[in-house]
Image 1 (spheres, rainbow, N blue to C red):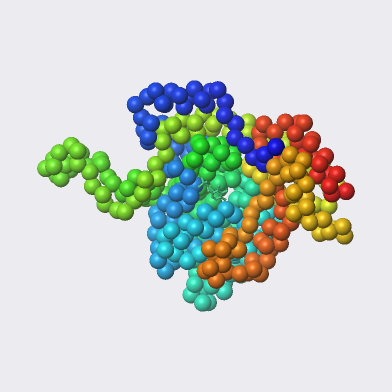
Image 2: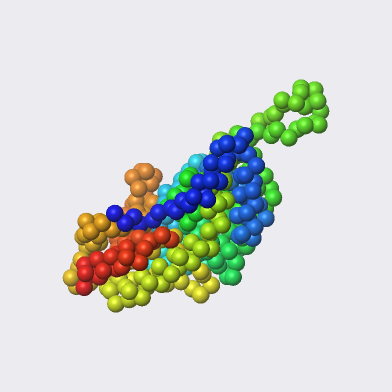
Amino acid sequence: MIPYGKQEITDIDIDRVVNILRSDFITQGPVVPKFEDAVANYCGANFSVAVNSATSALHLACLAIGLGFGDILWTSPNTFVASANCGLYCGAKVDFVDIDSETGNISIDSLRTKLAKSKESGKLPKVVVPVHFAGASCDMRAIYDLSRLYGFRVIEDASHAIGGMYDGGYVGNCKYSDITIFSFHPVKIITTGEGGMALTNNAQYASQMRLLRSHGIVRDLIGSDLSRQEGAWYYEQIQLGFNYRMTDIQAALGLSQLQRLEEYINARSLLVDRYENALQSLPIKRMTYSPSVKSANHLYVIQLDETEKNISRRFIFDEMRKNGIGVNVHYIPVHLQPYYVGMGFKRGDFPVSEHFYSRALTLPLYPKLSDVEQAKVIKTLTQLLI
Ligand SMILES: *Cc1c(COP(=O)(O)O)cnc(C)c1O
């Protein structure tokens, strides 16, 4: 089966990881800050905090901003559940803003309308989480302007988008946001097995996330009155934190993968160009982006047209799988998950996301997808659709 996404692990990656296994540190040690610095430098952010998943990074980002009971977080429904769950972890309420069907990203018009309405009812969000669907940045400048107008904070869920660009800068530079999150899960652009990172230009957010990543414990009290009194073993838990640390094993893999980020982005971009050319005449809708966006191309998502033949997405999906092509669907709208339905959301609440979901199909896309494999994907889909 040709999968929809796949990591690449090279011999160099393996050597780097083995070196760590032979060293003194296998949990968070000296390689984690090296990986953090390398990603922050690449993206152009001042600070970065590596953790054990993007989900943890989202949680810490919300906490650093002070999201809590009685607050509200908004995201879009066309995402993985973690973009919304982070609000619930903090005791906040979660609500959604519908998407733009051209990009799958949060609709700026819907956001603007919902903000105006929510201002009247006194239910403005404290945090908005724009998700860079498939690797293409949301319209961050517009979101930033609205955040100034309405006083909310912005956490970019860039789980799909490391290596992507917006407005001439790398996603992750936090030019138009408070914090940006990356995921290093194996299906994402670069991997650490499991892992994530939060980037920010705000020193306070960074130190708060570092503190909460490791139990809320401070150890660098050496020289303080208390440690003189108690001894060099002394540490203090000053907040309720978590064990969200990344290991040096993971960081070494991430650092090694990061060397190939540009190469990966270029390979993905070439594959997407080929899909775009080959699928032009099919009854499908392809994504379109503004010229200020350069996608990292994490996913290649098409929407099947509702043709007279009325071929169902389910049929195409099953036939592709039968032919050994691991297509996928991104995303089941989060508000339709049973857990969220239990909170009062229902079908019809976010119609653009629901329609997008009903027609969406994700085709295989990863740097090592071969010409022969891609040709098979194209040929099979073409035969099914015309
Ligand atoms: C993968 C993903 C996450 C969660 O990432 P983990 O590292 O697996 O926790 C969050 N948001 C989006 C949009 C994702 O695709």
